[in-house]
Image (cartoon, rainbow, N blue to C red; front, side, top):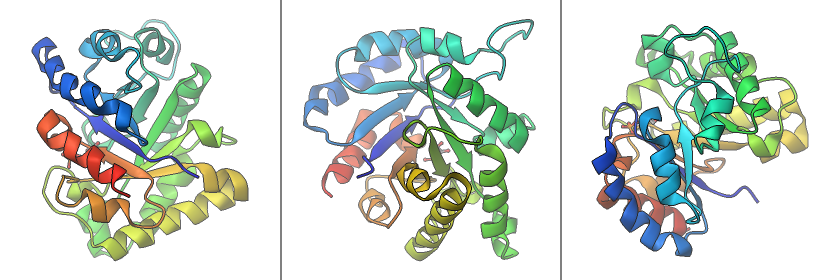
Length: 249
Ligand code: 13P
């Protein structure tokens, strides 16, 4: 009922030459039943949108400003990202929360702005290693979900991504039972906050050291509706096998 989404987050990687990585994905994408999304740096958005046009593979951004326009040097608004060809915007990634001091309320405002521009926000949440070791991971993530997800969202047009900070780029992955526990926790929170039916329809992605070797088992966990992939999304030879794992059931 919830269609799987495999999303690649290129972070601050990629130049025009990197767009050749899309070609093997486009060549195979007709066979995909999962949705596939790639979020390049903003410099590549229109070029990537152009290259993927008609393929069904979608293009997303990695951040946006909460205002539609104005005196915000260096920032990009959600309507601009829509104009550049984006369909989704990653928001509140832990790298933005830590490196740019983003708070839940700012992420919430950005998510509302993204939805107003007709784009799908992908709201990232996740605990640090210290928070997990202190036994407060569920509470931390609950707070982030409550405060970062806008009130009364369109459940079909909002995605939550659980990315434990300590699993990002480290090769470390939580146990499948820890992933199951956290995703069930987020699901029940969404049901409580948004309502039974809406909370059921929102997709929850897992992110953090997903690769071709672990994607199948992670994607089989209840309430894991797809993956948000960093390093392994940069090369088609790494990303395509993850998409294929998603197709494998
Ligand atoms: P890695 O897949 O490189 O761990 O990154 C995950 C991530 O941060 C995706 O947003």
